[in-house]
Length: 165
Image (cartoon, rainbow, N blue to C red; front, side):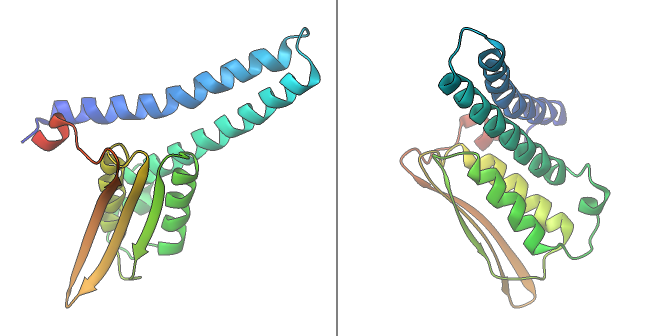
C-alpha cells in the first residue's frame, strides 16, 4: 500500500502538471498577442490558443476540485447530480483530443462520495487510455452499485507506481 505522503505527493504533482500545461500555452499565446511584429493571422491564432488554454484550465480545475472533495457538496453521501457530473467529465475529455470518453453511467442512484471515487478512478485511467477510449461506467446490480473505469487503446498500461498503490 502507498504511504499517505507519497499519495499526497502524487496528487499534488498531478494537479501541478494539469495546471502548468495550459498556463504555459496561455503565456506563449499572450506573447503572440502583444508582439507588434506579428501579423493579424498570428494574433488570431494566439487569441484562439489563449481561449483554448483558459477552457482547458477551467475544465481541469473544476473536475479536480470535485474529485478531491474541496467542494462541500462532494464530501457527503447525498445523491449526486449525475447530469452535472457528466458535464464535468465531458468538459475534461474535450480538453484532450487524443482520448475519448465513453460514458456508461446507467443510474441516478450514485452519491457524491461514489462519484468522487469514479472521478479519481478516471484521473488514474486517463493516462493509459491516451490515444484511445476511457470507459466510465456505473450500474446497479441488485442492492450494489458497480463502478468501473477501463482504458481501451494503444497504450493501455498503468505505471508501476500506480499499480503499487
